[in-house]
Length: 117
Image (cartoon, rainbow, N blue to C red):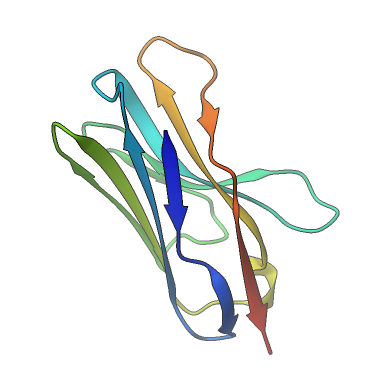
């Protein structure tokens, strides 16, 4: 089960933090992260992190975003902080998790982020 939180309307130049909590069968989870889909565009990776802590960022957010994870026996939570928000950061942000050995994963329901000028 994935529960996303955060998002909303944020002014350009501001910051936001998204969180995604995974519960249930979490022991085999490897990758957790965030993708986004802007209006009229394809869904794209924003950032993700392996269970071992290796982080991967899209060039568009590199240097102004931080992804982190908190793993416990009961749940794994991934956080994404994006600073210096731009109008192009607007879109629906989807949490994504993938288990070890799998080529596909599970998507959250998505949360809208709107950056206003």
